Image 1 (cartoon, rainbow, N blue to C red):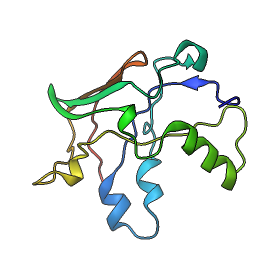
Image 2 (image 1 turned 120 degrees about the horizontal axis):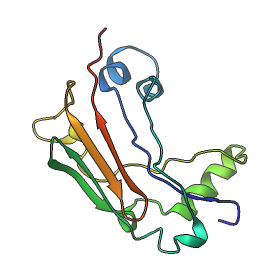
Image 3 (image 1 turned 60 degrees about the horizontal axis):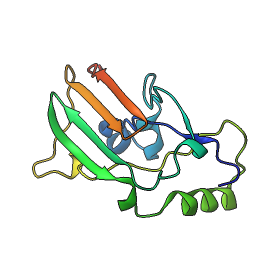
Image 4 (image 1 turned 90 degrees about the vertical axis):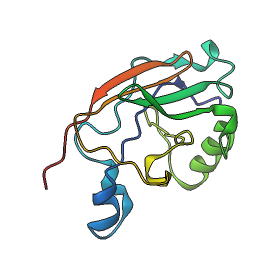
Length: 139
């Protein structure tokens, strides 16, 4: 953690049709323009000593779809950074995304996918909020 600058919010957007039905690997479903917005700001680790106990949420059209706390993560931040640095080079400015809270639409019964036009709000305690309107994808 001596090499971690701080923490910020990331909207880990996934385009599931491309991810699962367009062949090869899943990573292409996360790399479209406008995917993965970060911010609104970064909090240095000395300003956020309780980074492993932050509430997080995601709402779609005002309905709570995801909620959780960073203390519920499968792997804590220290473990993730240690693991990543053991199998890849990390350099100043690299971003390490740690996952998403419970409630991913794909795992709902029935599954729930964004179609376009929805208004998404997400946030994490002390890291701010993001607000986005979903733009439909045209194949």
